[in-house]
Length: 320
Ligand code: A3D
Image (cartoon, rainbow, N blue to C red; front, side, top):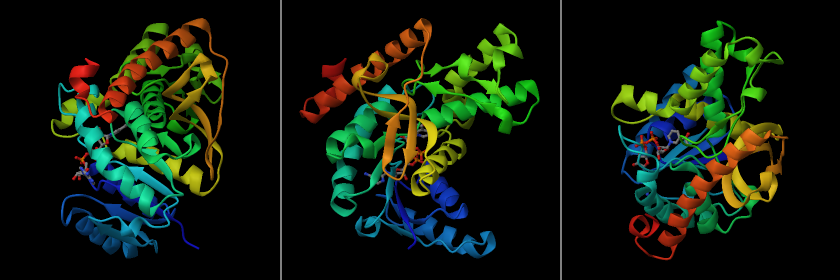
């Protein structure tokens, strides 16, 4: 039987995710957006591209949730995108309200689904989705590390004039300025990248990765990145639907791993049909461990704002 992926939010990221998923032949897609006609229009356009792209995927578009029934994965991309000068945390309150209107509908119509959150600020929104859904932690995760790692791989390939295919990278931590790109685990066909680049060149790549999202926002002026984010989602969805058990970084609930507890943070996980099947605890050196702890501390503060929001308080004033 064909599998189904629901995508909530038919904006730049959501519609491009739909396109990637259909054109990779991964699943049928149900697109939902609050704006009348938007999901329907994009679904129609994508369906009309199917004969040319050579896939038989079915795509629906709606403002309501009935069509998501039976979805194996629900990707949440609904929400405001960052505007120039706006931090991810500025988005928190507005997008928390949006998730509050979405997640109960997802639970009602796709109670067995794996929830993949893309809406920013990523780690606190993944936590909020977990709280609102009541799903087990194995079925709630956020996309960020795959994108951040892809950016580092792309920049490294450009710098070294080598194929992106041969470059591996691992970026952990919260999705934000405190993300933790791991130099030791960035390799070119198994060779540590530090053997091939000077320390200053490597540092410049890491810094560019940290600011990767902002660099695109600054150029686009309206809206934020969506091609690479959608490809990142497609890789994660593929690993789940095809039970590939790939090791990919994702924002998940830590329960003591890396010395962190009850915080959603980016770490490498084994991603398969059951969702987050294992959290891989790789040995970090003291500097890397400290950077991950600092990043998680920032996420924890945003999670406190989410907690205040859930209590019905004014999250921004209470959270600072
Ligand atoms: P955009 O193109 O504005 O699309 C967002 C869509 O969400 C719009 O079509 C809205 O109509 C829709 N929407 C708003 N409220 C609701 C609702 N209640 N129910 C259903 N749909 C709704 O933005 P985008 O696609 O560029 O970005 C979407 C989100 O993803 C933003 O929060 C971005 O910051 C985030 N994002 C995260 C990453 C990460 O790496 C984590 C990367 C790129 C974008």
